[in-house]
Image (cartoon, rainbow over all chains, first blue to last red):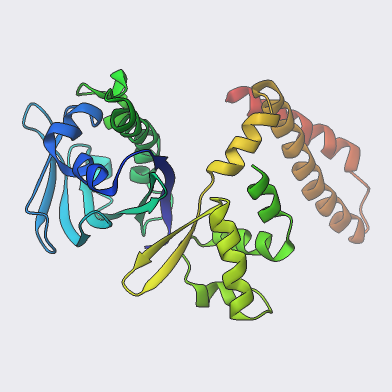
Length: 155
Length: 136
C-alpha cells in the first residue's frame, strides 16, 4: 500500500481516550463528520461501516488492527460513488501519540492504485473533517460546515 | 519553523525527503539504501525530520513506516509566496522546462546537420505555456 496516499498530522489539546471516542462514537462523529455514524464491533476482523443520517451506506470495510487509544487500521471502500467504489479497498491508519498535554494524531489514507480518484476525493474532505474534530474537542463546537449531510467535505 | 529549516539544512535529510517523495511509507532499512552512511546516522536524521513534522512515522506490525508530511513545507510556501506570484512562477517554471526540452531537441536536430530552430521553438513553447495557463 504505497502508491497514492493522503497524510495528515495534527495536534489536538485533548487526551488519547477522548480523541479515540470522538473518532468512533456516534454522539461525536455526528457533530464533526457530517452527521454520519460508524458501526462496528471494533475488534480485528469485524466489519465496519459509515452510515449517513438517511440510512445510506457511504463507506464500508473491516477492522484490520485495533489498539484502543493508540491505533486503528481500517480496510475502507467508498460505497456511494460508483467511480470510487470501482477502485476497491484502501487502507486507513489512525495513530494517536500523547505529547505533553496534547495528542498527536496521524491520519494516513492510502491505496495501491496510482492516480487514485478516491484518494483525491478524501484529500479534500479529510482536512475539513479533522479541523472540525480538533475544534470540537478543544472548544466544544465543531465547524458548522461539517455538521450536516450531504456536504462537500463528506463526499 | 526553526525546526523545519534546521531539518532541511542537511543534504542527507533532503535526500531522505526526496526518496519519500518518490515512494512514501518506507521502512528504516529501505531508507538506508539511499544513503551511504550508518543505520544510526539515518535514524538520527529521521528523528530530526519527525520533530520538524516533515515526516510522520506510523507503526505497521513491528515495523515503522515513514511518510512525507507536506504541511510544514506548505506553510512556508503560503507564508512567502502569494497567490498571484504562484501563477507567474508556475508559468516561468513551465517556460524553463519547455525551453530546456526544446533546446535539447534543437541540439539533436543540429547534430543531424539541420538548421538551428531555437528562437522559433522558444516562441512556440512560450505560446503553448501561456495557452495552457489560461486554460486553468
